[in-house]
Image 1 (tube, rainbow, N blue to C red):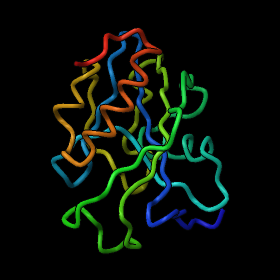
Image 2 (image 1 turned 135 degrees about the vertical axis):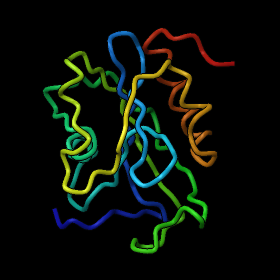
Image 3 (image 1 turned 120 degrees about the vertical axis):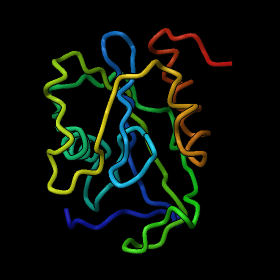
Length: 164
């Protein structure tokens, strides 16, 4: 791997993670240096597969590894969102937004394994378990459509009643 982000049509390729516990609550995290809450996610690097990106980002952002989770599903398609100019980072290659493949992960181990400081520069600073549909009312507006699509797709797998 070269360490360079992968772009396609102006969108950074990325994986997103919906981590669910035994009570079908979702792992919900606050972004470091911001007020917003989100699901863990991260960009693919050149030479990585989706699964390699998934486990690298899971380790960097949440401090968990492949043995700590069970993959229940991968989204049936790529999803994308545009990043408003106010949220774009000047230290990064300019991009239109993120193009993501999402994974539904089951975490049935002890919460003490979760370590937001596993990376030298943590991307997340707080976390909590929330009821399944809470992220739709707490996420930043530009992610709301993608979160609704992904949670709706995964709700069938978990037997969660669809949000109307």
